[in-house]
Figure 1 (cartoon, rainbow, N blue to C red):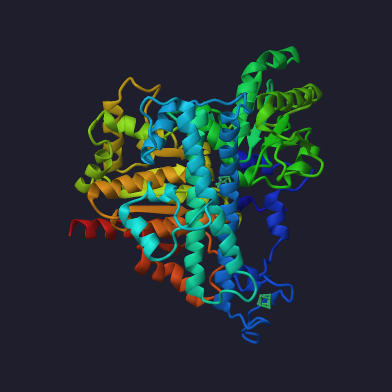
Figure 2 (figure 1 turned 90 degrees about the vertical axis):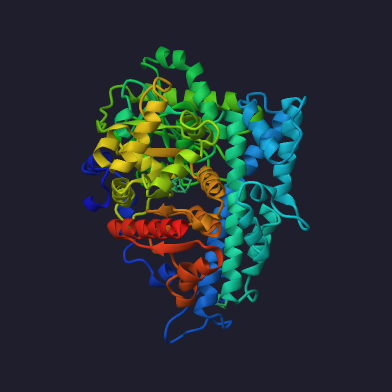
Length: 631
Ligand code: BF8
Ligand code: SF4
């Protein structure tokens, strides 16, 4: 039976309060208890098939002689590699689509932001003067592909040109600078084969390199998505299950890659008439997880829910289709869909679900395939006629769409010469106590959305400027924290004054006022936060480990979240994680994460499952840095 205390989202609780014909993640979490303590602490090794070997007092070594520190460190590297592979696979598809565009094989795509393309080219000293966009694009795509495929002799340009000089020096001198994304993934996989590296420090450094490979893929993904689909600017919409409209064809897009979801948005606009011909009032699109964040940021599509509750919108009975691409799609969605007349449509050759519809998505026929998906949803709507829907009314207003470019545009109204000084001046005067990035997922080891909310409220009260991405931002969207009204309720006086000044300087420019938390986008867009941290450090004339900037994954879940955490540590940030990751089986490895990383890179991890205590630790980290910076 569902534990009613495992979410704080009222819409989720309302759906779960009903008699349900099929199970959800909330039930399956209970069924999985107790979870294996070897896996939970990282001391289970399955790297060779003599295993699994589990470390206990009675058997302190694996069959090959591997000790806890080797096994835990090796598992951590492999987890980070899963994350780096996922992000880089996503961005590889974007690069390949741009290549197809250059070759004339992607007729439905175009360069939406030539300005961004030129800005990227200038970053890499690629000539732009008097050149056609497509010529510049060819050079930028080549550079991106080189950063994926180089085998030796040089290092990743996407890192060299987007972080502080101090970080480049640190990564090179400590031998964690990737040669290329694929080189790191291959060499790290080899390094963690049976009978290879047993040195925990060497392994953890490799995990950081895997993190930096992850950063590379993510940054390329954000940059290239901006070129293809436009740089996000502020959007005003709503979020949570109240956005479902029983009289419309309801289509949820779920997954990560905007290559498909952007096409679905376009196709839905083209097919309004078809929906009406079927008796509906129109088409209601909505987003789940990070593909939802992508189309929220650029198209204003409302988020219906975030990761953990992805099965629940279907349980309203009103979702006609869920179009999924890659990553974070629970296989469980299909069983729920079968109970509720929802068509799940998979679209990626490497993410299929038995029983679901499948469209083999290709950039050559993107719009046509998106239209096909929508016609499947319209068929679903026709069959839904007369079926009673139970839709929670909960929804909140949302202001999102804060790319770094959009933020600089707002800051320019106060300081046109040096927009970043709007933040650094506020940090110097003490108006802002620091900057915090909330990233990552949901995890049933805690209460759904609770840590996200507790920590953000606590930091807002203490005048910390708040940024959010991924399913953390999903929580804030659903729960009303991406609104101007939340400022009155939660912000301290300094943060209030900071946002008020921005509102006044930009009066009349936007459709409404700015929100309490600035939504930077999907998970790959965490690199936007790094761009801000880098600019802040450069403006202070110091390296990132000295600035009052923290990151938190209050409800971390995926391998990608582990990879992101690792590169944020390498970048020099204190990184709070609200779920204890599987490293505590080795005091040595745990100590490296919590302390040694700090001594070497300036960044470090903090594990803290209690939201209030986590906020206190994050504030302490910010205050320590502010104090040092002034000395
Ligand atoms: O891409 S969708 S659960 S992994 S946060 Fe986490 Fe959410 Fe997945 Fe990051 Ni985004
Ligand atoms: Fe056991 Fe060593 Fe094989 Fe791991 S690599 S499963 S510890 S024998």
